[in-house]
Image 1 (cartoon, helix red, strand yellow):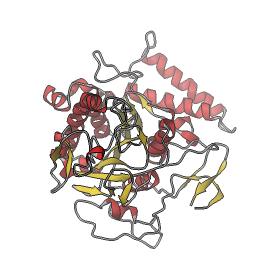
Image 2 (cartoon, helix red, strand yellow; image 1 turned 45 degrees about the vertical axis):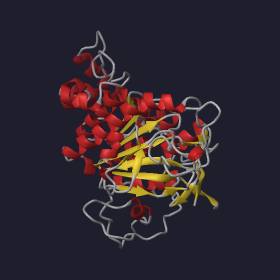
Image 3 (tube, helix red, strand yellow; image 1 turned 180 degrees about the vertical axis):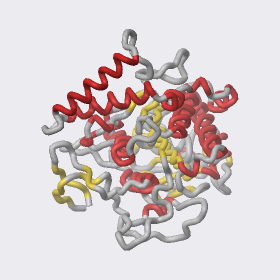
Image 4 (cartoon, one colour; image 1 turned 30 degrees about the horizontal axis):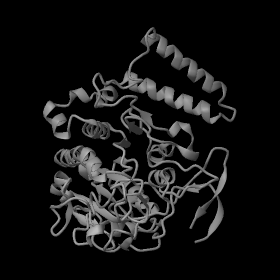
Length: 430
């Protein structure tokens, strides 16, 4: 591993970039192994069939660190002290099992790719969160942009909707813009779609501001920008203009307003997802990407179970199981799954053994991530943890590897250099 100075910053750097693609590009898409072996396309090479397969991404993040042993990697044949705390259920992938608390996801496993060999070296919440939102190790010199902000920067607005939306709110600083600047930040709903009287902020004019007054304000902003056109504008001014333009588009576009109207969903669909935080947040994310949002980040629960992991998992997991399975089925039957990449991730895993408080502590050496749609091959278990779920046994995947696959499917050149404001330079991993 070496470092060198460069002008700008790559979106990520993957250690597997020199491997050539192998295998067939079938109708079901590439395996993750194939994706991780792809090089950046050279000028004399045709673009790979999976490049830009996904038009949008839904990133579901479970803060706190969900235990792989109590979810997707239960280790039923490990010594008793290393097994998951629950029984298992057979999945739609022959010979594979999930924990018994995931029966609905087990039933749609033939539409998923489960990575059982995710790994990084950060056991602190903040640093683990940084890794899993940016694909980068934390740096004291630079704040890296999140997946959503990179997507916003590279792919831009579609159908008058913000390219990057957080449901219900931006969950942490690492879900932000980093060195890209404020204009590529997330639009946050401002309230929870599961709550009574749900209403998205910024979708209506403030009291006392009619459409004519709003139009005058917009004209005034355009005049200010014209005044500063010959000067170097600050990031704050650019961001103000961007957000003002987005607000105008949201307020003036019936299509944009309809995208956030979760009440338009039939009761049957809302019930299928679940009338709870997970269900209604995931359903909102589906509405948004179907309408044109490029990246939707959804957070659910708090999974830092140092104590009483069995009881606390039983409280949170059923809603997640129902909502995520419903999302996969819904996207599939409406034809959106092939062009929508779904990623379920968390900060890190949990310790191989239960502690004295009947919980598990932080463990970044190995954990599980789930992908579906957007060009990923269906019905795949990628990589393995060892016999005690303590570390990867095969095909270890770090956050840079994961983001390599995600950006490739979205049609984003992961080797492109993105300049920070002021043409700042920084070191990068190679």
